[in-house]
Image (cartoon, rainbow, N blue to C red; front, side, top):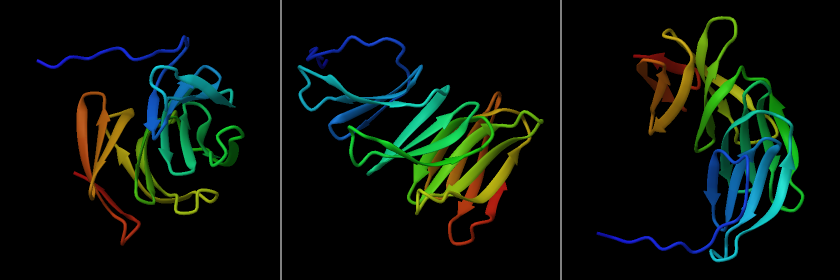
Length: 178
């Protein structure tokens, strides 16, 4: 069997969802997102914090952009080209996003709507300053909690059912529930 050897750690409380991008770990916390420099695994350190007072659910990093799903506050986009001074560049009020997944220029959301319908939405994020909803599918079994994307197929987990959907980026509005 293989072995794992501890290299380093950092004291940190209230951590949650973590996304690794290059030499950085982006970790959600009770005040937003903490950005850790992990380039030296024996001495990781807190590089900066994105202060946004929301209940964050999921973080996706793509190049110079960080997408943050915030339970009651929608979806936030930050420019992280300067990690010491991240800037919020967009916000949209998607309903209770539990999970997000990025594929190319499309961001898929699993969300719970307080008014009874649960959705998987697709947002075009080619220009992250202007998030455009391009497709939506209602999930009939309740609370869409997880979304995964594999090529043109979208999988949404809603409590006791796994839904398979098909999305075509050539025809934005082609999202069907199977």
